[in-house]
Length: 286
Image (tube, rainbow, N blue to C red):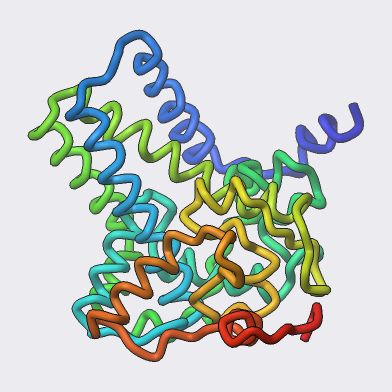
């Protein structure tokens, strides 16, 4: 009861735009439970889940936030657009917030630590104005690119997402919008949010990091490799989060492929990943 009362405290300033919009998006997905999707519906769901999901994991996270690899300016902007299509905010805002998370992980200044409550870490932080600050100074490097800067201004962060809905409508009609647009958005949202909530309360901790990050295998599958979160916090700049063959990291597999095709270069690997590849070991926290 005390926790619930805290959540409803009058001092909390709710972001009612987010509260209403995110509630409506979830309600709009309900019709999907009343009919069997077509092959086209499922294809749109998978296609845009992968495009926008990798836009977050590879684009926003491993490229823009941590500079885990180098690529052409065209690719840099394309990844920013794909990440924005996930409807998780503009790239400058997202990256600034994520860098703030790494600065203050699981401490009072962390925008989305589940230490306050699991609900807060998962979704509640996005419903509170106090947690939606723009940490522009932490992402000032991104603002130097005019396309990335434009994606972050005004209503522009919504436009790539709306474009995916138009494509789904043209290919699959309204059921295509439901599966490839609405359900896919919710699916990617909760995959990302589980990294913030689940992976900061549970999971294995092979590295003794200063926060509560853990490796959760099923989040790793769902969030395209982001569930190996303790690995990530141990060496944030590394673009390859997996250290063992059984740690499934689809984002890393795509990066490996792109590297082999010479589409990207200077892919950062963690010390633990390199040691595993040559048959050595690395102590926790090293």
